[in-house]
Length: 225
Image 1 (tube, one colour):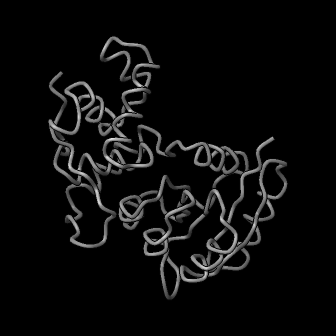
Image 2 (cartoon, one colour; image 1 turned 90 degrees about the horizontal axis):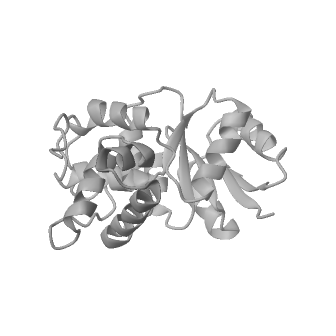
Image 3 (cartoon, one colour; image 1 turned 45 degrees about the horizontal axis):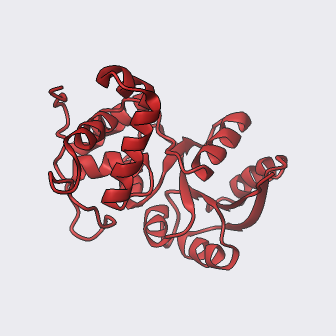
């Protein structure tokens, strides 16, 4: 059985200890470190090389967004107190693969860590739609704060790959996209993988962000076909 190495980052010791204790109850998890702020998180991650980081957003000193931006190895799962925290979109733009509420159930936490470690994005279609609706038209495109996104162009993606990316950005699941395009779900997965590879993105969440950041998809617009 493959063991998932996890680092827990939160400025409240009780929260850190609680999440670490929960994760340690699972045979396929190993908590390799904890941190109380972003700077410490970066140091701990360099020393322990985790697969997944549970990252609080609001912390004194370096916050979770900046720490996420600086981490290049592990996948980051944001922990937030509020469902539509104003910083969640910034965290996703900075490279996070998804987010969880701090009052999450133990089973949901375990599932989330496994999903993130497996390279998937922890954004249910409904959450994707809500995030995009709430934040995409409110948040200005940053000059320096986002990780480099390659603009999707006709020269970069095929017409079908562009279409798939638009549907991903609308919040459709692979199964929903397959139904819409009358293809198999496996075909959709292949297209999504190619889109990620061509645009230099690591997961579905980053594909959604890229589609909106580069103007390929406009909030409120519908895919023409």
